[in-house]
Length: 226
Image 1 (spheres, helix red, strand yellow):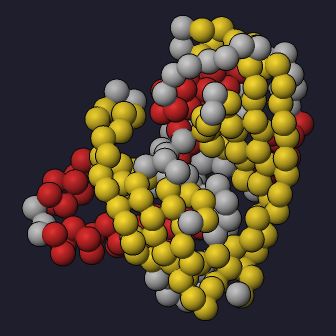
Image 2: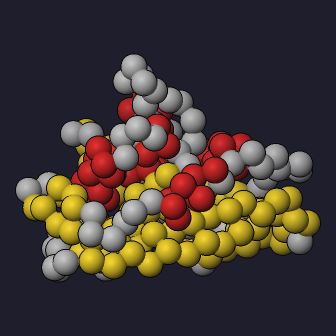
């Protein structure tokens, strides 16, 4: 393995003062909205400038939901900011429910990125939004072989975009392909979108928890070693 960089990654696992039910997609979206309001002075939490215009960059703060807990992940410059915030007893409005943070487990790791001499397996914990409305129409018109090639092309493109967003330059050709995939309907900002989940292999050494595709700050495209 040829090491390219180690990037700081902080995770804050939030436990609530009571159990919360609800689907992960909706809860991650609610968590993002609540924390964007709580820490609105910091544009890392909401991806908008002082005038409310979107900031087109890889989101360094990402929100996820797992096992009833809220997970907040911070990459690069965002890692130290997450660790310095007052999480305990923070009250948040998640949808129709007001909850308080009863416990916050903070971790900091330096995650490796590198070039592998062999293909490494990964899987998607949550669907990746690689197909937007304009390319989904083109995708539907392809035959099965063409659709498979398009999925793999989008996978390569979005992996490179995520790495560039973390200032990682991949110095050789990136090989990546889905070894198993399926399309899944996903809800994002009131839209019905098509996500891709499954398993993949590539010649990049990627850290646990990297996210790819559109709307990664909402919990989509979450990768782990497969």
